[in-house]
Length: 136
Image (cartoon, rainbow, N blue to C red; front, side, top):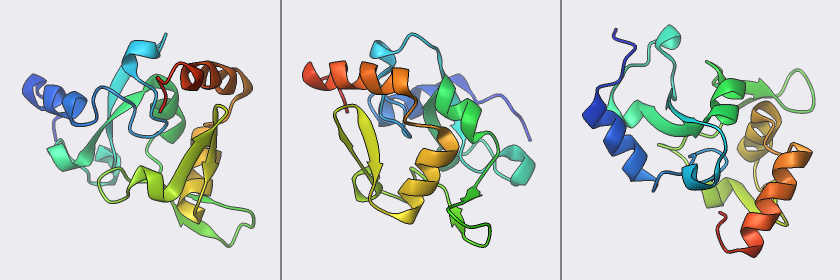
């Protein structure tokens, strides 16, 4: 399986969510870090370069997600799927207020935990962007 995503496919992925990270909803325009194409199901787990398996992701979200599909929430016997932007609707699992991303579901809770979506410096920046109507 090719690791490199074709340029035309990348362009379609970027345009699908208006150049926003599909996990934290940060706009590329407002980010200091580069964005990447994430394989929702990693190549290591059998995922491919199909449009439906790709998500636009900020560097931080992609780095923390890695090849993970699940994580533990609370106890070690509670494995929960991560948010999948092709199968889940962001607003059903999260809401943002004062720069903080809050979970509505176990999937939201798992994703916030694993992707470390609420680092203090990011919260402050998102709060400023919210005040400017630039986030989410």
